[in-house]
Amino acid sequence: MKALTPVLVILSIAVLLLASCAPGPNTLRGTQDADGKVAGFWNGLWHGIITPVTFVVSLFNKNVNVYESRNSGGWYNFGYVIGLSVIFGGGGRGSGGMRRRNRED
Image 1 (tube, rainbow, N blue to C red):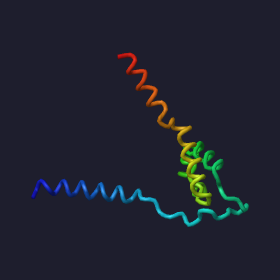
Image 2: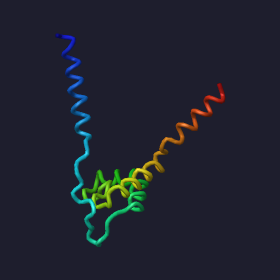
Image 3: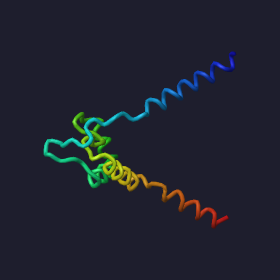
Image 4: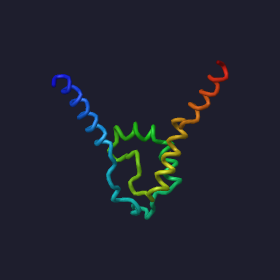
C-alpha cells in the first residue's frame, strides 16, 4: 500500500496538469472588434510571428493580449500556428539535422 501512494499522488498531479491545459470555448469568435473587423488568416500569421514580443509586453501591460479572441476561427488559428512555426523553427530544422548526422556516420 505504501508503494501505491506515491504513484497515486504523481498520477493525480499529472491528471490535474493535463486538465488545466484543456481549451475552453471562444465566445467572441466571429464577432467584430471596435473597428468592425474580425481577425482572419493574415492577422493570425502576424500575431504568431510577433508572439515573443507580445508576450513580454503583456507581462507589463494588462491591455495587451497574446491571442486575438475576436477571430474567424480555424483560419485565424491556422495562420497563428504558421506564424509560430516561422519564429520558433517548426520541425524543419530537426529533420535536417537528422539527415546530416546519418550521413556523417
